[in-house]
Length: 319
Image (cartoon, rainbow, N blue to C red; front, side, top):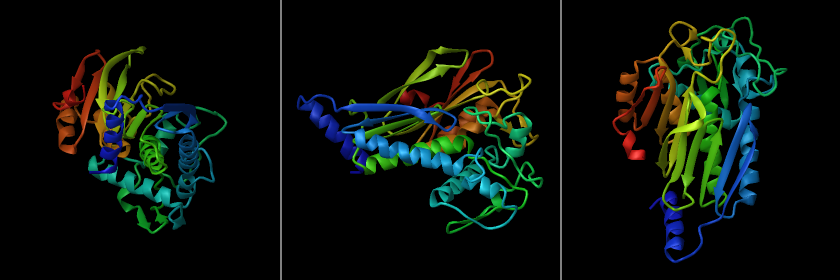
């Protein structure tokens, strides 16, 4: 029996014996250019502070809006080996894995294109902007990034952006840390990426709503997950300049992806895995994307520009 099952069974046993539901405490704070929430099941006051400390540490390491971050030091290294924090090594590993898993649909080296479409400044503070060396090119060479211990060497001209992977992986790491600190269960929500671990408040599953991209006051659906992650990528939330420029990029033509898909929601075992898969919704045909997901141990839903909803064959497992 693994730790998640032990925690879940402890909650179920307490409920069955007539005990009150375990305490649940949530805290909402600014993080990663927006707002996030961490929810802890069990005695969680001390856990929350530690969890938020890790979340903000990851933001400092991975932001592209601070020249002293690990990510920006790598972007300006121009081929030189660079020593980074072990947590940044984990990020680089996940970025490379995502690029390979998605056959290049997920490309972390498109930062120069992202700047070209207008995403140059932090959404939380417009005075914080991303700068890159003149050698920066998109696409770069993700496969050519070399990891040796805590030393990273990127080919000259290659730059990276943590992007959505930073949110998903941060959720994974913060949830793991909260469980280490004794939380029965934990849920993180960082700018729409949700990761859960351990026991849900009812000992069964977390109930999570999926926002309607055409009316953000409404929910399109609710799902139930007992562990893992659910992430939603949207081309409607971050627009720059003309209305057809958004932050979800096509790796083949160095521009915002042109697709009928407005939002894509992916359920997978980790936040990093879900993020690795979700970008393919915007560069593949919707049917091909949804057929591909179950083979990747994931489920998904897409909303098209005409309002139609399509789901993978295994989506109902989570309803």
